[in-house]
Image 1 (tube, rainbow, N blue to C red):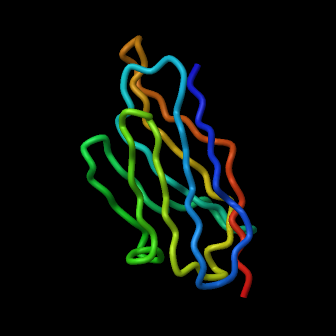
Image 2: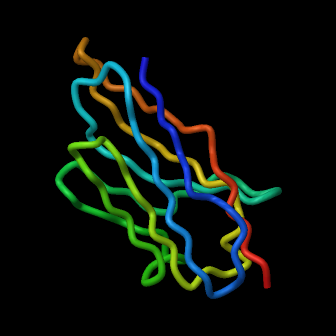
Length: 120
C-alpha cells in the first residue's frame, strides 16, 4: 500500500508565498515521477507542475516563473514552492505520483489534497 501525505496549504495574501510538500511512503520499488494538480471550485482538475526522477520538469503556463517544483529522491518527497500568489491560484492542490511497485507494475496514486486560499 502506497500513501501520499501532503502538507503546507493555508491562507495567504496575494503576492505571498507558500510551500507544499508531499511524501510518498509504503511498499514501493521506484518513484518514477511526481506532480501537483489543482482543482478550483466549479473547474476541472488541472496540472500545475510535474517532475521526473531524473529531474525533468514542466509547468502550466499560468504558474511559470512563479512556482518551482523540486524533489528529494532519498525521501520520496516532492515540493512546490509557490511565490507571487494570485487569487486565481486558490484551489485544492493534489499530489500525484507514478509509482513502480515491487510486483513490477506501475500505478498512479493521489494525495488527499490540501487547500490553498489566496486573498486579494
